[in-house]
Structures are given as C-alpha cells and as structure tokens.
Length: 97
Image 1: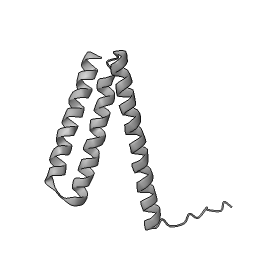
Image 2: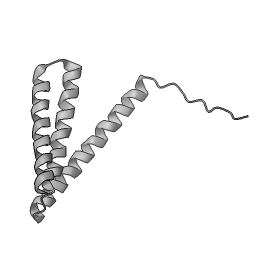
Image 3: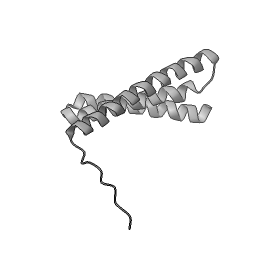
C-alpha cells in the first residue's frame, strides 16, 4: 500500500515568497534580454528585434498586472501600447529575420 505524501498547506508567507521569487527571476531575465539585445546590435545580428520585443512584452505584462491590482487605466493603456510595440517588433523580426 502506498503512503500518500502530505504536503503542508501553503500560507500567505509561502505565496509572498513565490511572488518575490518570480519577480526576481523576471528581473534577471530582463537584464539578460537587455544584454542580448545590445550584443546583437553591436554584432549586427537582426535578432535584436526579437529580444527587444521580449522586453516590451515584459513591461506590458507588469503594467497590466498593476492595472489589475490598482484599477488605474493609465497602467492598462501604457501596457497595451508596450504590447503593441512588442508585437510589431516580433512581427518585423519574423518577416525580415
């Protein structure tokens, strides 16, 4: 007979730790994407458009989340604009390579 492993119930502290870890991970990914974008531009690689679009998508996601929390339309509008810019860069990169 198998014994079921019991996991502790997540509490508010666990949720805050999870949120912070995701936030820090996003910060590191954004920094890496910035470095990649700069390296691609310096080397003349067209992939800078794709990596730059990731930065815009990250900014858009952060602002839409803030809108969801604060209910201020300015966050949502700027988030949508950043998302559109990110999408345009990604399409440009997809078409031109």
